[in-house]
Image (tube, rainbow over all chains, first blue to last red):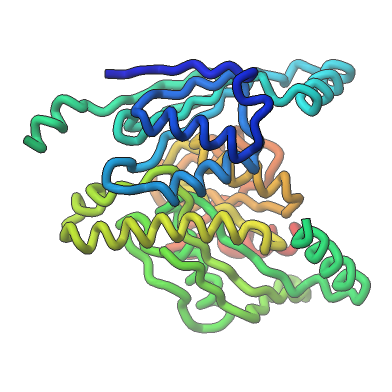
Amino acid sequence: MLTPQIVPYSEIVDLSSLGRIRKLLNIAKENKIVLLQGRLTKEEEAELIKITMEEINKDFKGVELAVIEPTTQNDHGLEIIKNRIANIMLGDRQGLTVIGPASVVKEIKKDPRKIELLTKDIKKKNKKRR
Amino acid sequence: MIKALKKFLSKFVNNLFNNKKHLKLGLYGPPNGGKTTLANKISKDWLGEEMGSVSNVAHETREIQIKEQINIKSNGKELSFNLVDTPGIATKIDYEDFMKTGMKEKEAKKRAREATKGVIDSIKWLDEMDVVVVVLDATKDPYDQVNITIIGNLQARKIPVLLMANKTDLKKANIKKIEAAFPQYGVVGISAKYGNNIDDFYKALFKLV
């Protein structure tokens, strides 16, 4: 069964980078799909991949990750500066980050404006294993 | 912080003595994009020998491989670098996927373990690079988050980036899709396997550094 868990940005804003990654990864390791308001920094995304690799075992095969960003192509001048200042002061709350455990999510197909989540047929897999 | 300071000082000294053309050039990208095929092509072209083994099974390269002192020449200019071929970066690794290719369970588990370590090493090595060529499979979806994360990290570290749209010999290859996904970067379409357009790659490299 697919269980999404919404994480508002306010829940991670006061955490350290490692704390943020830990929190999101722990949710994914419970076989839930994380829907994070906003996004991690690029460095945190790389660290998330690194920590995911360190924790791979027979039960945890890693994650599928996708970030969808709002279109800012039409923004100009003051709007861009305003957004940058807001990102520095408050964190990057725009967009949506999806982190799904690889055991549940087969693939996340993404184009700039939409995300498609392809899930695994768990029932079939369990039957096979029995 | 200390690393960044060391790197800055090293670059400053190199620039001072106009010796900035001895670089660490990293090949990065997702698994099976053709990084080692490109590394072999470069190494063969300029040193006359290959660098690593290639395979259709993902994560064939599981350790950082370095070829030192490659000197390339184009239009009377010379560029000297150490070529660093890195394991493909992925967010998931399942040993069962290797078993589907015919591997025995024990071997598949070993490969998966080594592959996870390879990904970690690739990410750790990002800070060491002076220039990076991101090798993408032009037949695949470029919007994959791994691609975006790698390129975003290089941008954050102010490392010059060149994108390779590899496997252009295949019908499904779509360079335009990669250009549309990363409009702020130069994209060169090549077939590392057959050497198609490799001269454009070398020219783009000279422009980048």
